[in-house]
Image 1 (cartoon, rainbow, N blue to C red):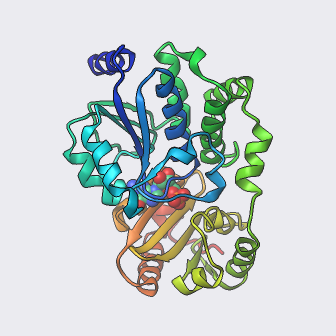
Image 2 (tube, rainbow, N blue to C red):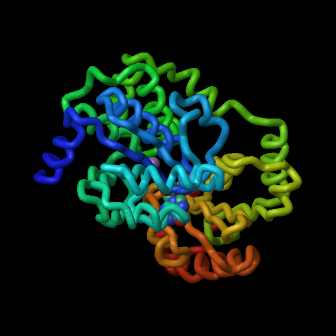
Image 3 (tube, protein in one colour):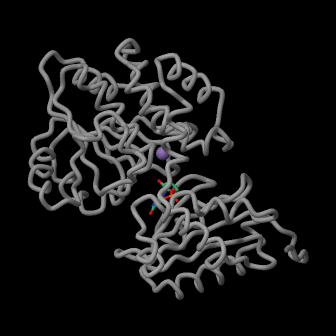
Length: 347
Ligand code: 5GP
Ligand code: MN
């Protein structure tokens, strides 16, 4: 609580603070929405605020208010500016992650800074690196926590339609469109307030879920027909996507988002994975049904983590070797992972 008071004192200070807000590599709607929503709030408190992302993000998020002013650390022409803003910051907010290596190339600059660090996050197994941490693994989204924090600071009236739409987007996507088990009463209460503030829920759903390029739809068709594997007897299905596949369909950042859910939607499947060959290794997305804790599997074997039913990881093996390792691990651990009796053979 002492740290909360120190934090509140800085935010409420009459002298404007230099603030940087950042989030994880390849931000999703919750990462970017919470960052831009918080930035809008802090600007209303007269602070100098810049959102710096460690990488680019999907174009279906560009509609968010404040998107035009985001600094992309990966963009070499913006690197010097970003490093200066980080070095000079009084406060740095880290949103939607709690393990500094998720900043990738930006990690060093943030570690070096003397700023007051604030961490707002809802992932499992947080690492407490910040001076003030506002965390709850029960929260469905970081956007939900940003809303709760602004209310706690007594500034509910500073929230407007643009801020509400950024926060709504993150809550909508991190609950899988209000379908996942994390869709709590508080989620609905916060969402109701955001709609009351003017968030256009139907417009946001269309902008995020129903704005596809023709290439993305063709890629989806290709992945479903040519790249989906089912592991018989293991209730597991996965996609493998090569660099060549991505090039062929002129894949843009965000084009593979949601793909892994098609594997999980198969009747009888409890574990789904997506292996994508990227320039920095094989990026893995994991999904599971309620009773299977896939984040522990991701942490134990693929240098990753996340939530119980939605996690990620990375592998430096080749795509084929990574898939082989995954298949072996699933076969070896299926009884524990899926809570199966030793003698039963499923699909
Ligand atoms: P996605 O599959 O949508 O990229 O990620 C699913 C969840 O896992 C997200 O909450 C994301 O933050 C988390 N996640 C994805 N990749 C990693 C990773 O490499 N390390 C950790 N710790 N979490 C990850
Ligand atoms: Mn999130």
